[in-house]
Image (cartoon, rainbow, N blue to C red):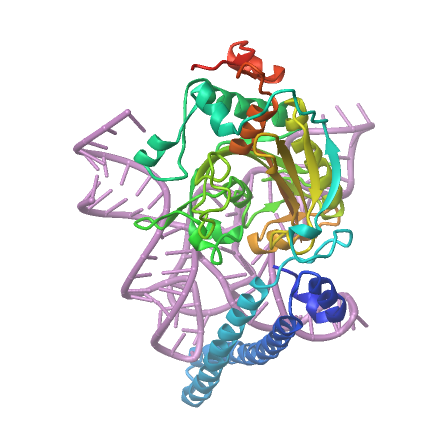
Length: 433
RNA sequence: GGAGAGUUGGCGGAGUGGUUGAACGCGGCGGUCUUGAAAACCGUUGAGGAUGCAAGUCCUCCGGGGGUUCGAAUCCCUCACUCUCCGCCA
């Protein structure tokens, strides 16, 4: 949620900034009007409550001394009825205001390009050089078939389309990648590892904004009202929902010391409405593995920390010797909660396309407001933290690009050196047929 | 799954329907003492909101929601969660 005070005090400037994301001004005016109405109702009901509190005390005293309290009770009953009326109206206004605010996206950072969709994204840098070899590179599906590491038909038998089975040295590669990434984040980048639940309740899904808007993209366990997580962001970020980083019971947050968590989890996505899009092989699946990084930071350093976060994700890819590019998303392509977002895209020479394997976002206080996640600042005041998250990174597309970029002429795939310790020293994935 | 007990401030733990935002203890913060520290002593110590330039004033919050009442942490209903015992199970 954005800060209602922005609409109250700096309406025109805020409307202009949100206009870059296509937010209609009517919606903002509605929020502003509801806020004004809300405050008027609060003033009215609180005045009456103060009156009632004082009168009730008086009645208590009179009753104790045996006086007559019937008339005073009658009058206060009327006041009570009036309070109930106003409170009912207030609850409705509160609800409407919240609904309206939830439909307003985060204010975009000044430096991001304005545009309607991905066509206006900006390539920030290219990392690693890709040279086509002197043999033709097939798609990951063919490479995987020769290596014997994917079984799509049996995944369909077990569950349905979009639930591939990964086998043998492919499964081991997957596990090695997870270990490599977690070790990199924890040993070199200052992260704490977490192994959270893969299933969460509705409060958690609401906290990070998957609910109520995107329910149809999620898998739901109806009996328990639990949800399968679409990303580790959900349990890891909600871990500190309704909490205050006070430096006593929870870590202290200063400009120099963020709280950084990383987690491996499977991710479950129904991908409703995406039928037919990029569904070949491993490119878009309903269950996949991912390592996620989440930062809780001091507001003064959040955008700076985003740059660090992107570098941390990049380090995963450079360590594997892969060529990729870094994209800054335009105002129209960013996620709802983000103020600024970078994507990392690996080049897949077999598919002849760029594959998004990481999305690193700065949410400023937008997500924290909804999560009610705060910290005690140096001045002793309790303030909202800023949150960031980034994939570090998503597995299936990483495997695709790795297979295609590291393919040799004989059909084998070279295992990057950093992974070999996790694979018993093995140097290549070898064809089995 | 069956039976019972419970849910109060960072933690432990009181609480009679009416100066209880909540005794007391611990912890935290500030101070006195000390060369320094500990101990001891003194003080202080929740969150959200409305209003105001500010100081302040006021409102709400004792698991969530609803009810009774002039007045609810305290009474009633309901939901959720936790614990203990039994059963089942990796």
